[in-house]
Image (tube, rainbow, N blue to C red; front, top):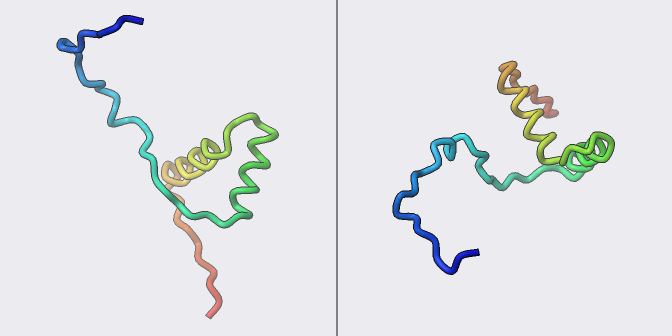
Length: 70
């Protein structure tokens, strides 16, 4: 590695806006375990699986169903 690098001609990454955004979300333990179980069989990280599932919901415009007892 060089001792110093010249970034004077550097350009911003045009794809930076497309990168994932880190968020904090609280999920029930059973949900995390479910996706971790799938992850162990598929080799895909569980956080990626959760992201893929949520993306599928967005693409298919699936709305959540609430079944709260009154």
